[in-house]
Length: 145
Image (cartoon, rainbow, N blue to C red; front, side, top):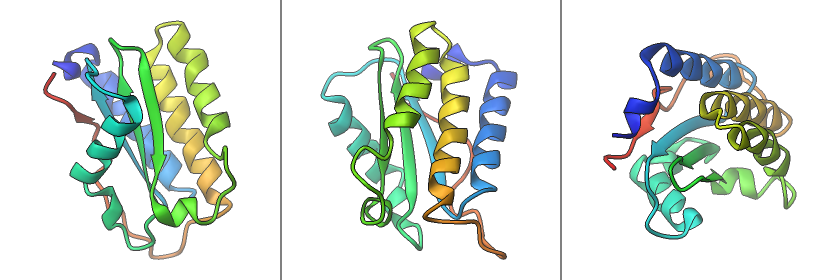
């Protein structure tokens, strides 16, 4: 299973990065990890986005960081509320940050850096609001493969 590549301590560090990211923004960051990929990475990320109900946040500002580590493919997918406000290529710097880690086989570091960078990127368009509630679990979701 995909969950097996991360120790509980690794998973906790990734959760903490998600929480740190969300402390800067009203946006919601979700990480999903699978071992294998049998289709286009963006098609799979879109499917997972829907399955995890990231489109159900109040401001439509959910972000999915999807990783298929054996296939060495990943995607960052933002909801429509984000896409309506940000320029094309908005996630490029986040992707490059993650890719630097992934090229070295450092999946944990890449996910942590990606989550934190996503929070910083979203802060400009979706700043943290007093009374903001955490609409999505900060737990990592794992595919069955």
